[in-house]
Image (cartoon, rainbow, N blue to C red; front, side, top):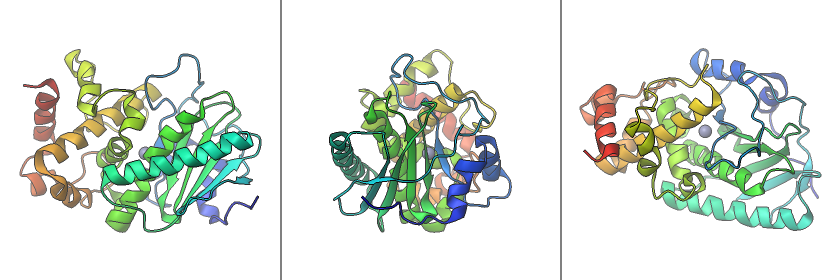
Length: 291
Ligand SMILES: [Zn+2]
């Protein structure tokens, strides 16, 4: 057993004190403290029916979660703490192995590794509202789950959070003001199989929505949208990132990533690809639909 590492108070404040809405407001207003990156609570399909009760937007985590628990890792580069009472000893051991595997997977898929240890906290959410968050400046990712949910779903979320850390490590502090479409798109894309639910790629995953005209414009912010739409946007953005990398290559994508201003579609698409965001969106749709 070991105590959770000291995390600067500003990193813990949002969970205990602020609502999701307030944190999202930081994203689009002051930009300070550095925006944590959320995964919507319904992320990762297919959703086990009735297995979760997502919190409505704007509702804070119902009870403060003490960041204490069992030190549960022998894996280099990962410091994993699991809330007391969440998992059996055997469950913890297999979680550590699963998270190690998830990190190795996303590093391969993303194409570069972490620049230091990643602190991973698996917390207990009494209301079973599965959700994750990344504080990349302090190399800390967290997921909140409960005993009733399969632990694999927490691993799926953390795969996404790990990619946020890899982005900070690859792009530096410019990551903190990157275009939201690319930030969440690349984290979801990088989580690959952990988010695809058996689909071969994100293009295949989102195609039915586009075929039925049920897609959401890519430039929309998820602020104020229902959680299900936020979820859908993450997948669409992942497929958009997949499209950009497939079409123009990774080097160009890296150039694009560091030109953002936080809000959706704020990167310099015209400067990097010679096309405006809305033109690329049209191309993306045609690519998804195979036209
Ligand atoms: Zn995210």
